[in-house]
Image (cartoon, rainbow, N blue to C red):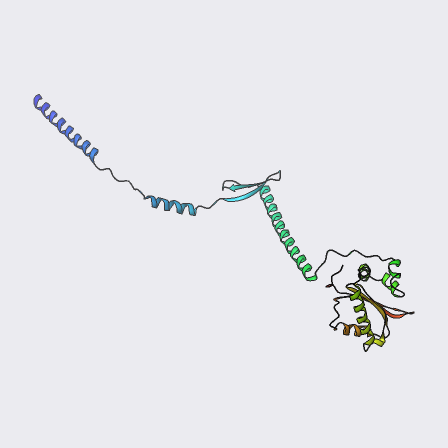
Length: 260
């Protein structure tokens, strides 16, 4: 009986060992299950979507107590103090005012340039010419001497230029004669009494008395239509006096003639 039981036990142990060996071999050589694997393109696509959907961090400006400006990223975990927010708003307001002032300055510069172009502004104003009595009385007789002395700067300047010019004798004599003849032979010549005509090189002065109102304007309108009249500038003035009546003094210039 004991032999039979021992034999059965040995058989059972052998069968159990064989079974365990089959299980171990099956476990060792069985194909492992495949895990869930995502392709690289799919991973990249999902990463791009997550990155695109993720809100970007914003920059903000912090004004330091020493006046410096610090630019920081604002993570959601950082909270700004009320002082930081107030200083930031003040900075933005000042920046806006600065930009507005720059724009206004540019606009004003354009307007000034336009006004100067339209009005032909000359910043080089002529120096005022002062004439002495000796400068005038040796050249003009009464009432023209006092008249020129008390005239404005424009006529005084032209008078000074006329006196300092060298004389082109041939041109001066011919021009003086033409002017004199024209006044005398004009239909209103009776109403304009010439007292003198003096020419130098590109300038002449004409002086006289106007016996009838507007007669001088009519003569001058006619003489400007003459082909030989080459003067392109006229400075004239007139005055009424109890002793002399209405008298005039004018200087005509031809800027195209060469002055020596």
